[in-house]
Image (cartoon, rainbow, N blue to C red; front, side, top):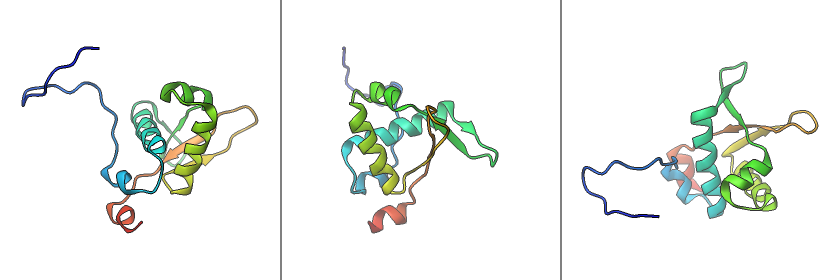
Length: 113
């Protein structure tokens, strides 16, 4: 991999968004990176539900591959994000991927934790 110094004219390579409020949440670094990946996915491939709210389907195996983590680590990080109120998973039928809704942190709420 080649590297270069940044200048004022440097065009950034593709990046994933991570709200600054996420940095203060008491969750693991893996969960934070996962949140950025999920947020990026919903911005590019989100599907609208009947209420116009975006969700994604991201099977555990695919998410594990995307993050270079084990399926067990992915499940643990998804649970962390769900318990922190950053995602909501809606179970589907047997063998189908959950619908994952990404919730955005409010600056005040993240600051209180």
